[in-house]
Length: 108
Image (tube, rainbow, N blue to C red; front, top):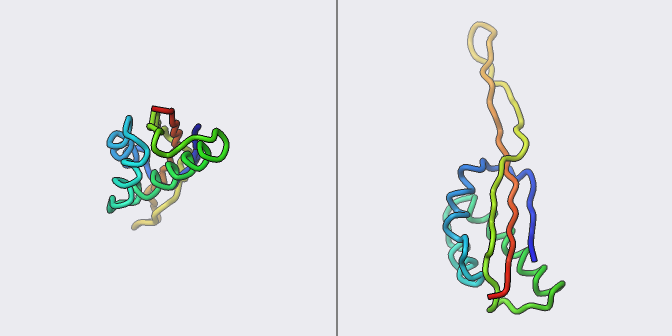
């Protein structure tokens, strides 16, 4: 019972802060916490958790009440490189970082 999201357009450092909060929590409690987080990472992990719960209910015939987040890992995804033009014909490199998230559920 898992959900994977690849190349999410947010850095892995920002997502790891949220992942540490919900790691090991019951799925229902984690949904409630993530729903009211004021940042983009909370919204994205909330969507991934909803997908994992839907997979567990549909594919494995599990109940929401008995599910726990057993593993949530955030790794670096691909990096988009962009340029920012500055004076004297030069440019600075801008790195648009992405993340990969693996979320696994288990029965309590």
